[in-house]
Length: 566
Image (cartoon, rainbow, N blue to C red; front, top):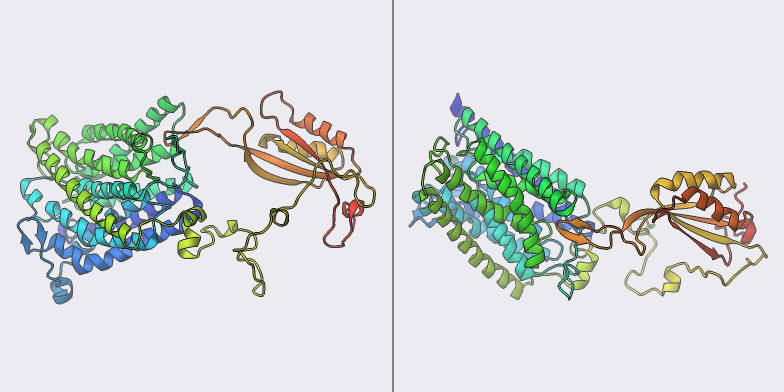
């Protein structure tokens, strides 16, 4: 019965593979949430094509290079194309399982190079990672004939061969590609570029955490081992996240949300190599180190090295992939599925040395391969979009997608009737593009009526009080909008992923009122009564003379246009 559930042909093995596939959704959500809305569609497209392109090239060549029984010198497999020539005897289970892991390695790179990479270039290097880069080094560890496997290097579920490789590739790509426009000032100042949706980012993290139980647990040999793997896969990210919360709380004065989301993934990455070989204490220590490493690595890469990695791909996957690989040599109990013993459990330095050798050689392989790949792409088809395309956003420039969020499309785009055309390329004079209001020049409308516009900026919490005071004056017509702003006092600096956001724009409400019969002083006095607290940020009131008013439906002007009587 156990054979039907566990092992390379068991049902759980295939369920685990399906969970790993679902990780593509998680990566897509994390990357989309941590970047700007104008690139959301491009990021979704890249994460979709990672798996689709990867399936094609891994089928043709990658799987053979990685898992072929004809393995040359412990280094590379001979692709015999058994999938196409001996279909009925082909190891379908192994292929599906290795395919979804390959797609994970390829998709990690996307985050570090987000918002400025050509889609065509992305398709090329994603294909090469799945075709050659990942299969060869993964075969060293996961093909029984691989030289690192023969040596005894252990990476149970891929801290080294998947996450570290993806993170190192991401770092090389980000360096060659360069930072996003506006990320670093000429004086060396680092500017925070917050992601547009922490909600999406959190959704992605929860999806990834859930799917990680298949990622780590699929290869469990029995139910007892599965329970151990699932437990360590829970402890490490949980402890890492708590550690990061406390660390950023102490360091910045407040717990950092996006960094804590990264910490959950960092803990998962780090436990992946040793999840079947460590105990609860080992998993907790791995999590603590991961929780500190992720903060230090993100800030070091961003602030000190000035390498723009929008989602922290290198810090999460590269740095913590290395740590996870080394942790096997430190915390393996000797009672795990692989039977190895680490330094802290009496095994000496032997296993730690094997892990270190595996990490160094795979890092070297990845760096050399990706430098060659990215350099060739840069010199041929080009790696980066133009400055104009980057500013407009890759959704519209690369995919013709006005917005990934249809309800927030620019007014007039997509809602015009089919017989209307718009010249979107020509320059429009400011006087035509923006309604002009001249304060203080005109005292009377054309019919002799004094019309005044009053703009009130206020705290969100005071809106209802202002509306009540306006109702008392008989003013029911007003325009209300949400705005962001700051005055001379910008308030306490906040931090996004360790970088200070100095402008500290605060949410405010803007109320616009136009009056002709009601005295302006009465409106101002009522507004001050409703808004005044005596503290900074109570708001401001701006008063303008209005030249005239035109009612669109009737064509009435001046005082008559202000009346809403039907």
